[in-house]
Image (cartoon, rainbow, N blue to C red):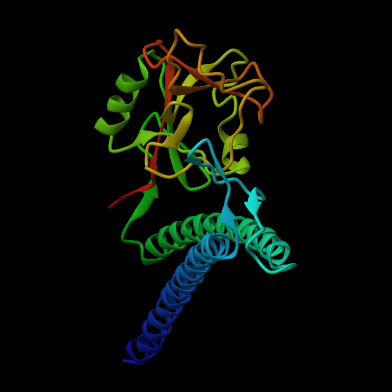
Length: 269
């Protein structure tokens, strides 16, 4: 009877501990989402204010019957002295504010990724603590920073490589930070390893397979060069012969390369 009485407080304390972990996690993610929404709104207001200032402040110069809008090329003859200069100064200040907001937005996205990684770690620890599940990568996959990676031993085109990843519930790797770039560099130890990553584009505009924009590039010197007028180099490979932070190259998507898949940790009973 005495053992049963002592068991109740221990279960209650364990449940309270789990609830605190969830509360901290949800509050952190919620706060970051709110901050990002405020920054996005501020950025849009800044851009709108900049356009309004240019339109209302200075008349755009007409050349050859066409309207050419360029920063600083304004006709101040019909504006009171000093007003045009003030508008141009305001534009410069707004551009500076926009640049700061874009930098803040980029840092916020990185912080959100770090919070998501911490969330995954907390979920794994919580599952292991409850003894009901364990998180792990499938066989032949490698765990790095709470993510699962698969480096192929075969070669495929970029599209064929991506289809293989998707068949495994994954996709070609999306590299979001210098930390991840360092983690996957020379993953198999080979100096000459060359593999596809999940970056592709058109006309020099690259984006990741998850739809996110390219923010932290690690191009080789002189890249991307788009292969000249007779080539289409719309897919990106990573070459370990180059330095870790200068190892990306744009290449034709039909080339045969190894590939690197990425996905979340799985939870198995």
